[in-house]
Structure formats: C-alpha cells, structure tokens
Length: 378
Image 1 (spheres, rainbow, N blue to C red):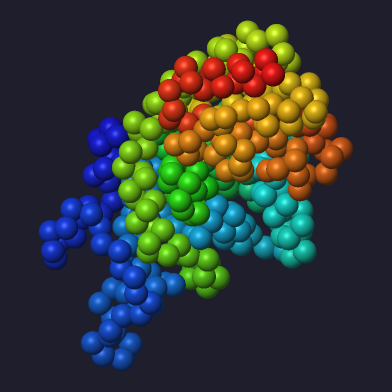
Image 2: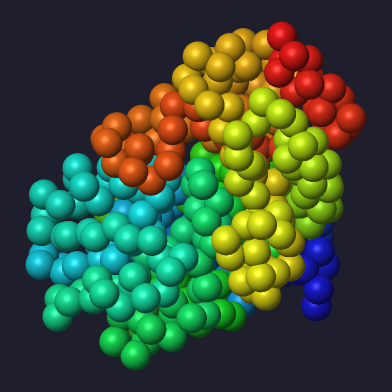
C-alpha cells in the first residue's frame, strides 16, 4: 500500500458498530466493567482510549513500526522516550537540535543523572569519537532544526548497533511521507505531530513509534505511569490531518523549491540552507534516504537588524513559532525557537542572529515569492 493510501486506510478505519466512516471521538475518562478486575478492553483513559488507540495504530502503520504512542506534545513524547534510560546513562545527540530538546537534556533530565553530548552527526566519524562505556543511545534529527543538516541514518544506526546503542530519530521535518527512519535501522522514531502531521495550527501533540515489541511494552508502561497522553479530541484532529499529509507535503515542497531558487539568486541573501540544493553538504545522502526534501528553509541575511526588519515587512508569512502548517510561517531561531541555547553555542553552530527560518505553506508560490521580494527590497 502506497503512502497516500496508507494515510487514509491505515490503522483503524471507521467504526464497526455504527458504520461511521470516521473514528468516533470517545470523550470519556472511565469505562464500565462487567465484574471487578475485568474489563472489555478499556478501563481508564490514561491507560487507553479508543480514539487515541486508533491514532496510535495509524502512526504505527505509516512508520512501519511495531507499536505507536500518542502524547500531549512533542516534548512529552521525547521525555517519555528518555525515561527508558537510567541515572548515569549517556546519550549522543545531533548538535543543532531543536532548542526545546537541548533544554530538556541540559536543564531538566541532567538533574536526574542523564548526560548528553552534542556532536555533528552529519559526519559519522564524530559519532564514534563520542561513544563511551555508559553510552546507551544515539539521538538524531535529520534534517535538523534550523540548519537543515542531514545525517546518514542508516550509517549512523549501523554504528549504534555495533556498539549496542539504541538509535532514536526525530522525524518531524522528514515526516512519514518523505522518510521512514525505522526502515533505515532506527529503533524509535519521534514526531512533534503539532507540525506537518496535524498541519493546520490547531493541535499540539507528540508521537513515538518503536519497532521492537519489548521496547513497546517498556514505553507503554512509561506512558501509562507518567500520564502525558493525548486526549481524544486532539487524537481525532490529528488523524484528520494525516489523511491529507501526502498531498500537502507535495505542494509544500513544490512551493519550497520555487522559493529556494529565488533566494539562492538574491544578492541580499548570504546563504541558503536546504537539503534539495546540490551544494548542500549531504545532498546525495538526502536523495538516498528520503523521497523528498521537505519545505523547511533557512537563510542568512547577515545580521539581526536586517532579519528583524524583513520580518516586519512580510505580509503573507506569519511571524510565529512552530512549522508545518497550511499557512507560511517565519521566525528568527536565535530569538525564538533556539533562544534557550546559549549565545556562544549558537554562534559556534552557525545559528546567527541574521538567520531566518521559514516554513513554506500552501499559498501560491508566486505570491510568497513576491512577498519576500518586496520585503527584501524595502
């Protein structure tokens, strides 16, 4: 079954009892039991809810995994996965991860004895150099946020497997339409489903998929014990969003390619970051492991003053955090999504104050280019 079909017919389709084509929203907290200690499949909605279960089955299917999990946000899903590890464990992470992921590891989970080292995983040799006796996992973003670096997931997973490490991939930018990390050797895939999967700026959610039954049992225990689950209304909204993911991603990328072409030839743009550019450091790897390059673009205008001025001049790009929505969004990562990363670290990574990130929406590409043109001219 191809992806577009899978998005519509994967998981649990409709409702057998009523014939409803759409999975019902089970807005319920608890379930009647026929006898003490006996239930008919559900007992309490933190442990399981039919609407959430349908979503979890869907993401499991479209990521080709063993078991799926739905959480209240992308950060809740990452937190739950990190609870698979113990005090004293060490995690190797991509260096320019999302600011919230960096904050979680360096300001929260470090209090519980979980240590993270950040390295440029787009260079596989750097992974080997960071492995210690207590290293337990490799955490990748590919493409990364916001510099759009690409890691060879299959190569990285091979290294991790050789050393007995789990490979975890944040596939938020890639989406299941363009990229499937489990098929490339990863053990766990994560999504901030708030973004492309939801696609309409109306739901906050996180998803995780594992390809191993034992790992699934462990993560379900953590999900139930800690309780950061997704509610039925948001689960339903997310399933509705996923149905159109394929056609949205194709249009997102078509628009992005046109905008990249415009930016790459504009004299006020110092550098454009996009995996689809032939000059991108790991363009060939992106072509090999992904079916598309996505619609996230970053570009540098030189300094903070120019960046802030540009953001005040655009008319169709909405100044906002988040990404992956039908409307085009624009931000300055150093002041917004990555402000929690220390300034000296941002500078070392290349996340300058002149760096602008855009999430290309579904508007007409000519209108978006005209908007950027007038903003740059003014």
